[in-house]
Length: 485
Image (cartoon, rainbow, N blue to C red; front, side, top):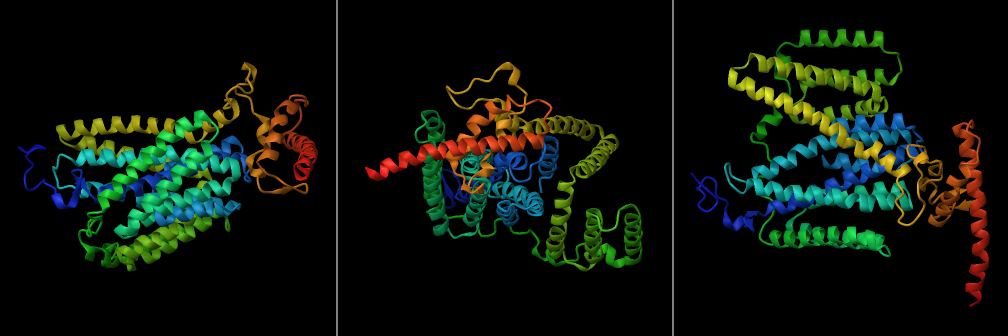
């Protein structure tokens, strides 16, 4: 029986390929995963506000539905970077396509990088668990940094800059993964220094924020120094992530269909006729059926590799439409999730006693896992809105009364979406937005309660412009004095 002090030959790591007892490639994957989580949580910190306060103007119910459909499917790198980048464009179709790219990309990325971490350790090696602990530290570090940077940038300078920063994070992780050792070390060091500097810069002048940002920045710099030292002696193993049987990717994706194509194509024709009978022609659902039908026709004649590429290209527009129509997405998830649970329960019932008992434990854990993730994802939707609307985040500022808790903060109608735009002949900057927001909440209390939302919006905008006029009027004498001096 082997232990850490006397590992057997089959479980021991090559000392020349390790750093601090772990494979050197682990420290590359640490930063790859850290930047992926940075981009994910950075986007998540802005997503719900972008839908409710940005150009989309969604209500809470619609925004929560879209957010739920997005987080329900955990489907690699370039797709996710493209998705983050596409979010910088103010276009509804671009927005939903970006979400679809993120969903599909995450499915390629997330399972494979964790598998790579495990595959670097020989089976039974006692340090494997510690390696995953180090890897998860990268996840936590990326998740901790992203709201402090992407959230601050997005709500200070505009949504596009926040999503753009998330894109840069994803690209930094990708380039670290594919680049050679020298470039990877340079990237790790440069991104750590720039990120740490940005966190300190945004918190400068606020001791509380600096006290939060500084420890995270220091942890990032320490991790970068360790990773750079580790990569001095080697990087990712050349065969890491390679298919066990590369020839399998060139085989037909579904060979059995080629042998009996007639029943398969009859089934496709029948399904297509049924869908066309039920679905309105020209609707988005007919587009989904057309894309899926095209993929189904070509599937028997594709090898496994091309089937993955074409399947992804088909899936992205289909997922974009489903996310946009989140009620349909929820129904599909419920149906397929229920069928999967029923199949697992049926298999458990038919299994031998020991397997059945283990399957019962798995089903119970799955149930509580669903509850956990349902509550966990409130952090990016309802809890974010509650905090934004009801929690006073300024020390020593306005005190929120009990009657205001749970009420809509109408001052949010003057939002950071105004930043950088020319409205009523004026270029809006941070000071103008802050001035407009400062009086809008007080002004809204004097309005009759029977006013509709569009009427409130119009009046609040008018009050905001009045406030801006007053601010500009005060600025001009001060600017003139400074020029004279």
